[in-house]
Length: 259
Length: 370
Image (cartoon, rainbow over all chains, first blue to last red; front, side, top):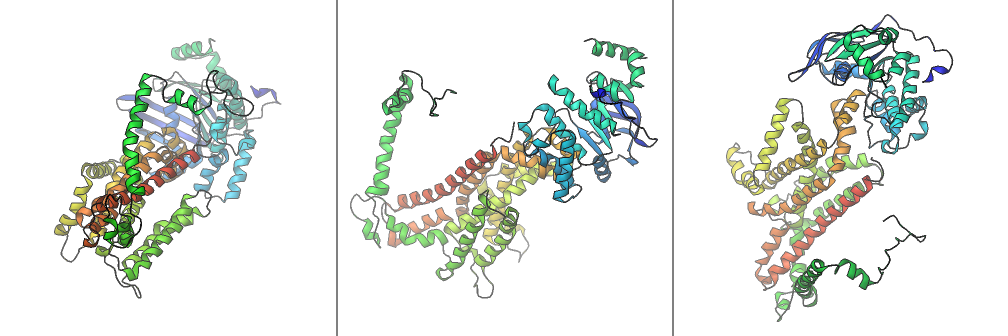
């Protein structure tokens, strides 16, 4: 990973609370996916959420921008409580960017149009400004030369970097990553992780569901381990990897670090 | 197939020849089954094509001003019957002195729709607004009249191709947006809206169009309060539009179902509202998938306009039938001539729509998608 270039910048964490989840429960029919989730994230914090598949990791971060409504408990994002109030949901979504496992780029639009759509339609930005903004972020993810292409013409890694740029174009305060590298061929994982590491260095508040434990070691302030809908353990990466407390955490780490 | 020589022509398997005889052997007589099918097809074509050509072209009567011209022995189609009645076929009983108004509506319609259909033509948004808002108003004022300088022409005097086009265009223009709204409604997460959409769609899909037209024309006036008696043609227009909207809704819903949920979620996640996500992200992809189905519905609708005949409105086909009973033109081959003419006109419109949809599909499929 790219820890080599210069000393890692100090990644500051402020005292401001960006995300507060307290007593959050969610059910899919009879299935209790989230059980009493309590999680506080400060501005500038980078949280990695790990756990076996089906443990509710994705559902948890999808609750943060209300792609999944929660059934019980409180979720407050940057001072805005998520309720069924559609206006507030839209407000929160404007501040929270999301990157999906399957990229979910809009295939009928060029890379540039993918990035400018929300600034134009949601922020009502003038076209030239939206274009400049999009190009700025496409340069940040090192892909400006592909601006005129359609997503179908790009590799998986390139598509995921475009997806990150698209989310950044809304100037979000929080970025959610839902297994951003799981659908990528191995040789493309690094290019996406590099972009995410850079983003972390710039002080972005990030929640990342991932199996990339190297990434967790390098940038996370905390690793949150989930199993069967519960947060089992929460610790800084050094502690989490070297001295896991819970038996299930140990078992998970043994499996994931075995190869 | 990938093998090509330097000239760019596909290289052929050795032993095959490029001659017509070789082509025929490969494609028409490659086995017993194929040979039998080829012979049967040739026989059927031989039975049908020569008599048809003979009737419509070689033995047909092309000139003349009265029925006597067509009363020669062994005469084919009586085209003078069509020439003599062409005004009725196009305008129905619209007063001849006012026909210029219909012609303006036709010309303006062509001038608005053609640039709309050509992808390279500029100002699509303006064009669309003109087509959907301004043009219908102009057409209504010109056709119905009752304005200074424009004497009223009641819809009972409209007929022929004019009525066919009015019904079909109204049906098409209303059914697409209404069908989209119904399809979205049927997939809505709000139970009330979903139920309403389902009930609406299933009601209109469950009744035959003839029933709809009868209800609109005969039953509806019984339910409406006295004095409120909307025009017969208008009632049929509403009936046809709602009827085809239900079909359109199901076609569009098929397209919506083909779009992965991730597209909608991604659109919402970047902050787009429901309608923005639908209009900007989901519908452009969904509608592209179902162009053949949409055009299929349009073509069906265009041909179904002939059913308005049963409530006393004379569309093109109805007008042709009406002119058949004209004593000045009772000739034995009159009916066949009239029906062939009507079929030809319908075929030109429907084939045109079908070709345009093929063109759009090819255009939209150039290298955009995975």
